[in-house]
Figure (tube, rainbow, N blue to C red):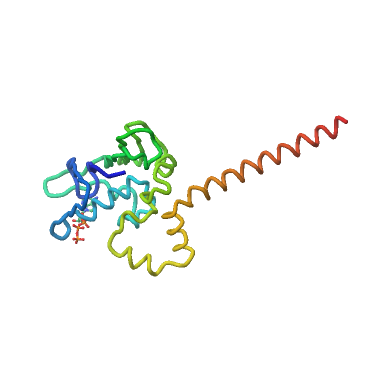
Length: 199
Ligand code: ATP
């Protein structure tokens, strides 16, 4: 799996649509202070379903929409897309090219899309679960994050290791299966009662 490109439109300091291509290997983004380097990382985290505005350095949802600048009017929509090469099938979809998009309208309407088809936040989370790329994974290390990881509690560090080792998906499935089992058990008890009354 490889992030091929990021398209940003109306997100934070990016008033106009920009397209950043990433080749394999290392890509460096350089620029003066305040030119928007960290906003690119915020944009990537945001598409991955980041719900904590603090983590993307905003106070509320609409802070991510371009709020106007030198001779530029505020935008009414923020949109970011990630273009991913999935030819190695690391992501659980049988397609080579995956596009993941998040949109936020000024009205507060929030949308996720996978290859231009509407999706839920749950679909985005499941797509990246245990791949090391999800919003809570450590593929995006912003300023100060290393310090935060070092000072995390042992429970939080255990969660980081579980995500990296691919255990989280199994744990979520186990909890879901336990809930289903409980439900079925309840149904069996009800049926037993009815049978008992009939005998
Ligand atoms: P540094 O090198 O200092 O860390 P940087 O290149 O990482 O800087 P960012 O922090 O990404 O810069 O960008 C900060 C800029 O983004 C500020 O000028 C800020 O005004 C602008 N900005 C943030 N949110 C918005 C928004 N919603 N609309 C317009 N501009 C915004």
